[in-house]
Length: 437
Ligand code: AMP
Ligand code: ZN
View 1 (cartoon, protein in one colour):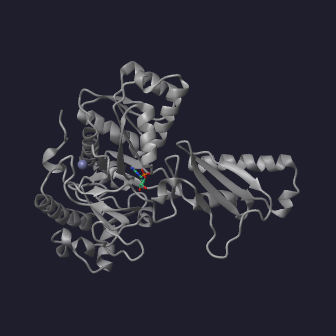
View 2 (cartoon, protein in one colour):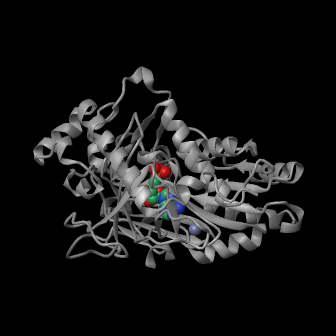
């Protein structure tokens, strides 16, 4: 059984990898300078030209790109090739105002699918496997990425998308799926449903799961492994850099190998922007080395993690990143969806005419996220009829669902019941354990 999808790259010596990255970086910086006026302007403001970038040692001279830049450039401002050369767009799970739209040429799609093929192979996948893709299909990158990777590896691909869990299990049994790809929370839910249907892992044939797109703990890994009878592998990525597959776990199940021939990773201090030495915890920054349509240089992911070099017991030499330990911005990932508290404020403002006191409470019960919004009634609302309060609750609930695409439990509280703060308001209480490591 092939252990690697691309042994030459995945097990390349450090010198060879550095030489490859140097060569690609020089070309990529020139490509961006020539084709992306927005980034050229940022480079000029920093006093850098492509001539200053001779190797990866010069990377720190380049300006950062942030999510705000992406929003400002929406939709075409960072596109580096003519639109007629693009074959695909994908988008983040945010809503209109916050959406990031990424473009792909056929070369970019191939590159991305190749990264996912490496992840599937590292999880033991071959052309003998039946790969059930239960990530959402559509603008979200999960379905498309793993689907493409599964095709490359030659697995029999089941493009299930997410949802309809009993049917997922039915297909899993009928077709003998051996690999499951979905978010870890959905994997856990499938595990629960299996049990509720009176079945056990012996009734299905799964051997591996490729789970990512949201934070998850080691405890959750163990639970999923037990409930579905498989080995659970982590996979990482973001729309801005392609999608899942930027980094993937190997048999060691201890950190994810970054596909360094396509992406250079740096760790910076989120407050000062200073590059931190290997082994230090900080914000992950990615430079894409050979994407054509959407080639982001020094993109700040906001994800906090640690990088480590050195040969892994799997034989790969690709640098590893730990599971993200949190984010340096206020974005929450609830049920796999990116949620910014400001989006909730916008809804409250609309429904109340003024932003009321509110608090967002996120927790994890079993393996699913719970999402509650506590909203304080004003004194005059408090005396309103129960019926009008119920109507308000319904309206809030519908508006939140429309904006975020997920449901929140709305709890209307008595006036003055939400604690006031003398400093920054504590708008978010995230009780999930994931970010405490
Ligand atoms: P999106 O572009 O909408 O898919 O969101 C990307 C974000 O999802 C990343 O910046 C991370 O915060 C999060 N993410 C993706 N994969 C993982 C993972 N394996 N573990 C933890 N967080 C993840
Ligand atoms: Zn490894």
